[in-house]
Structures are given as structure tokens and as C-alpha cells.
Amino acid sequence: MLDARPHMSRPRQVLSGRFYMLTRRCTQRQFLLRPDPITNNAFAYCLVEAAQRFDIDLVLTQQMSNHHHTVLLDRNGTVVEFMAHFHKLVAKCQNALHGRWENLWSSEPPCLLHLVDTAAVIDKLIYVATNPVKDGLVERVHHWPGINAVGALLSGRPLRARCPRHFFREKGPMPGEVSLVLTIPAELGDRDEVLGALRAGIAAVESHHVQQRLSTGRRVLGRRGIVRQSWRESPASREPRRKLRPRVATRCRWARLEALGRSREFLSSYHAARIAWLAGTPIPFPPGTYWLRRMLGVPIAAEAN
Image 1: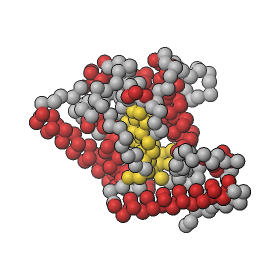
Image 2: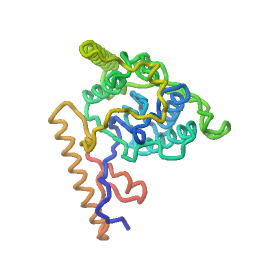
Image 3: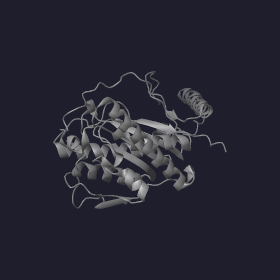
Image 4: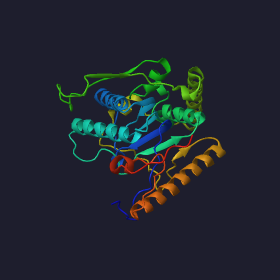
């Protein structure tokens, strides 16, 4: 029987073919992903292996010192399994590297932001690419000492990584090396136009922050300062708390309202189906129901064309 407790989390609709920006932060904002050759390789390995295992199209990723942002296309509705596998591997690798035993990730759930349209995807690509610049860490995107995924996307060069031997067995089941080309899916339109918009957005953000530093006299931390930080440290700044956690992103007000309307419709249908199931008169759950379908095999209604 399904649990009827009122404190259960709000269900999320998981449909194939959606673009997302995935974000997750390290516990206590510690620099547990601080760039260095071993960490960079381990992060890239875990990300690529998980994406290939669950058929995820990776568009762009940015491994910051205490969080990551990853833009992706979930072709087959496997993003939940991808997230769990990827974050588990990264946590185990980094804990083994640093001799830790506690949780690596924050107790907050990952933020999975549905990118409703192409404009929203491009906005988030620029946001992800320029994160180190906006945080005052480096002057230019390519100066960041972490994974150069931006360069890989713009050049078409594959991300490559070797199996982290500080955690995985040499003769274990994991592949010895992984390689994946970051992609601009056809659903976004012309590849050259998307990359052109990304290049222009990066240049605009870099120029804006150069002018801002000239007017304030502030300086970036720089590559040397970044790699010298201890993984035990955290930023001195205070993180905003109790902010809204949006689930959809788009520039267009009407597209946003439409997406929120579909979400409300899903929730209404889900709760009606759940009440019927608990009452012993089951009706199909709406398309996109994930956990109950996978764990309990509840009936799912056909998707509308």
C-alpha cells in the first residue's frame, strides 16, 4: 500500500526529450571539487560514464570548487537515474581521495531546472560557461583550472578521462577510459547559430566584468589562488537562504505560464490517481510519473499527441 503521510515531497514529472540544467552543491559549501588534475579527471570520468550509461546528451558542464552546473538533454526520461549514479560516483571518488567518510553533497536535493525552449537553454549555457568569471575567480572563461568543457564544446573536441585508480579497482567492471563529445542537439536548431550565441554571450559577460573591476579596483583570485585553496575551506561570503527554487526557466512569460499550467495539471492528476489507488479503485497515473511507476508498477495513462 502507498504511504499516505502528508509530508511526502512534491512529485516531479519526468518526461523524455526535456532539457535541464542540473546543479548540486557540496556540503557546507566546502571546496570538495576544487580543481586539480585528479579531481578534474574523476569528475569528467563519472559524468561521462553516467551519461553514456543512461543515454543522456551532455551539452555543457562546469565543475566549480564547491558545486557543479550541467546542461543536458534527457532523451529517454532517465535523468533521475543519471543524477543518482553520477552524484554517487563523484562522492565516493572524492571521499576516497580526501580520506573522508561523511556526505560530500549538501543535504538539499539537487536542483533540476527544466529549460522550456531554445532561448532558455542558450541563457543557461552562457550562465554555466561564465560562472567562474561572474564569481570573481578568473578574468576569462578559459582561465578556469577545472575541466575545459567550454573549449571542448566550441571546438568539438571530446571530453576524455581515465578510470580514477584511487577508488575503482584496476580489473573491475568500470571502463578504463571514457570519451564523449559534448553536443548541440538538433532540437536546439542550427549548431553554428547556437555556438555563435554562446560565444557572444561569453564575450559580453567577460567584457562587463572587466569594466566592473576597472571601476571598483577589485581583482580576481586567479588560477594560482584557486588551486592553492584547501578542499576543507569554504567561501567567506554568506549564501542566500530560503529563496525560491524554480523548476522551469524561459524568457517568454507565456511559455512560462504554459509550463507552470502543465505542471499544475500533472500534480492535480497525480494526486487524484493516488487517492484512487489508496482507496482501492486505481486509475492511471499521469504521464511522467516516475517513482511509483518504477518502484510499484502503477498504471500510467498514454501521453497525448
